[in-house]
Image (cartoon, rainbow, N blue to C red; front, side, top):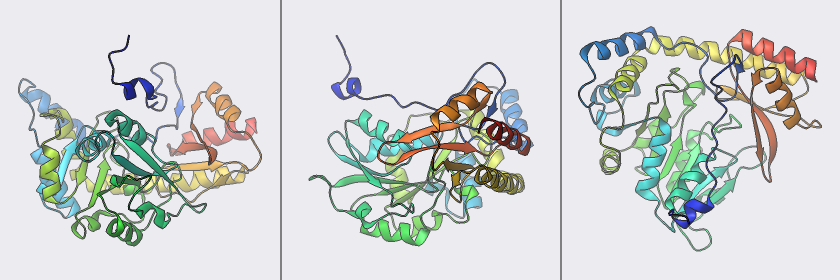
Length: 351
């Protein structure tokens, strides 16, 4: 006998990237930042521990909102903080998408969107990218199979492709949509442009950001949403009372305060990204120009799952992804130069 709701029994759980807890790997599979975070992060955490952890944290992460508002050129009440950007996705899903309603998102993209919709008992519509990874006007259709979308999600830069939809096109899409548009910008700090300024131009546009990638805080869990204040006020009703702990608030505030560290880290990641892309192309792979901290690599005539398994046997983890109706590929995160060089050398030997 099952006590779960029927759609919970029927759904498949989301499978995160491998996180081996033992042994030494070159880990290029989950788009983590390979460098230590700003030294200010450790100092901020130590200060919180010194003060003590006996009291609940600030429920709105006021210190982070104030500093992030200065960095992003918005007001603090335009920011909602969460336990990673995945919680931001969960909060917005709970707010806008109910049982039987419709979530629209791009495909191939982040498969967690489907899982979150299934938890809500919602229907989903996957709008497939064009072959050049552009997005057709179908994304703005007023309904799908008799249902108007309650929320649309665009990953930008996209994963696994690393491609972007321009802010001008995003604004055009939002103006045509009958529902809010959540732009998932987990990788935006590695891109040439972003959609943050669009939030002030259209109340339907929300932008989600993560500190896991560009601030090297994947192990801490902190993300945030930028939206107009009336949207933020509604979402605050839904979030857990103390969804960000005192350590993560202090660390995230210190991280976003250190913009010199972020700029230097970004430059290092982008330089190594070019090295990775050039190396994979030299091995015969088709590699898209990337605006993220990873590269999407396909091969014209070689099966990739055996290669992924061989790399794993050699203690190198990349992400093998197979999208029905689209095809498979290897998504390879940007590591430090020595990791990329070692990975390319092993790949060359295996090929």
